[in-house]
Image (cartoon, rainbow, N blue to C red; front, side, top):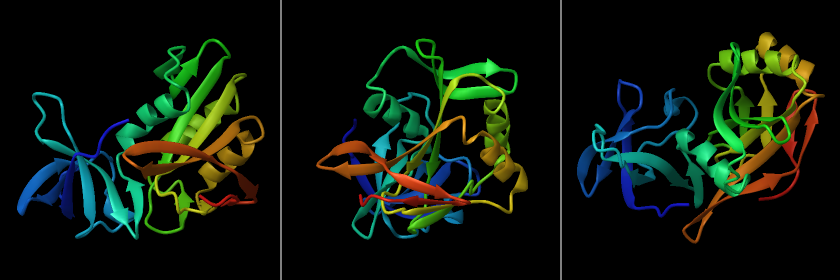
Length: 225
C-alpha cells in the first residue's frame, strides 16, 4: 500500500501525453499522468481535488504522479500503471510464482503468468466518473489480439476488470466494435472473468471482488459496494 502524500487541484492535461498541470500550494506544477490516452475522454478532472504520489526515480522529469481523485465523496483511482502492483499485492498476496509481464507467444504478452497452475492473468482498468462505462473505451487492438489468442490456448485464463471508480454498476460491451465483440463472445466460455473495485479508506487501498451478471452485451454488477 501507500500513503496519499500530496493534495492538489487538477487544472488540465498537457498537449503531450503523460503530463498534466496540477496546482499544488497555489503553484501550477507539471505532474506525470499515468495513462496513455487523454483522461478527459472519460472523466472530467477540471478543478477537482487530486492526490499525488512522489516519483522516486532520480532522473524523472516530474516530481509527482497523479494517483487518485475525490469526486462526490468517492475516491477514484487514476493511476493505470499501479493496477498490476495493486492486484499482485491484494489479490495474489505477493506470490512470487506469478511472473509479471510474461511473453507467451509472438502475439501474446500478459500481465501475470504462473507455471504452478498454467494460469494467465490479464488486467484491464475502467475509469469513469459515471456509474456506467463502455468496454473497451479506448484503443481495442491489444485486447482483440489477446482475446483471439486466448481462444486458441489451453491455459487457465483469467481476465480481470478493475473498476477504478467503485460506483460503476454497469459495463456495456461495445457491440459496435464487431472485432472486439466477436472475439469476446468466442472466448468468454473458456476464460474466467473477474471484476474488482478499488476502495480507499483509512489510508488503506483495497480491491473488493464484485459479483455480476453478464447478459448479452451488458455486465451488471449485482452487489452494492
